[in-house]
Length: 122
Length: 89
Image 1 (tube, rainbow over the protein chains, first blue to last red):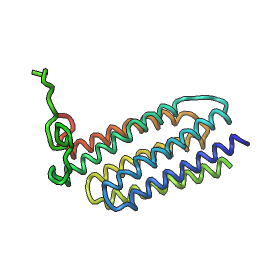
Image 2: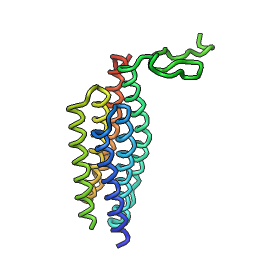
Image 3: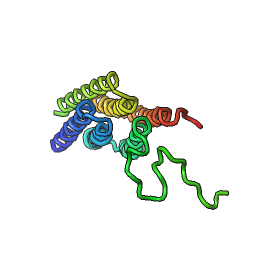
Image 4: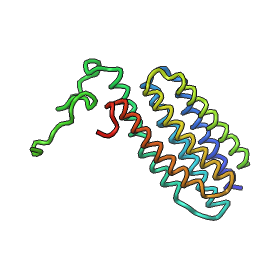
């Protein structure tokens, strides 16, 4: 009974998170705003589904597997990289270097400037 | 109880897929389409795992792992193509 309630809770919460992430994709106005909804909410939703699956196979079927943790780890690692790439794509297509604030560091924005060379590279 | 929650989660992710399709069809530029395709891949992973719970088999983990890897690589390749005009320099 406790197992049923736990699994149901995780399934419902993850479904709501996934729906919110995909709804934000059509609701938000700007591309840079739209990057936020799927990369955060949907990744959390998939994490909830994976936890529910792990609990189901552990508590109902009686077999433990840690494949789900691998998938969760992979998704949590790749979601920020994906968001960074999409933001860089948007910046490269729509903005120029004068539209952006100063980086405050020694080098400019990575989208426009060449990568810095090490002094001992020659 | 678990069956009802599974049906609810299936409905949520299926509706999410429809939203993503709408964004792919009407997206103003390429960044929106890349983002919608990546979200679609994540939703499909969730649907595969839900189907695995539904059928009670552990076969679908490997399928969802493969979908996750292929989806990440294809997203990076598409973004890189728009960014640099070339995938492998």
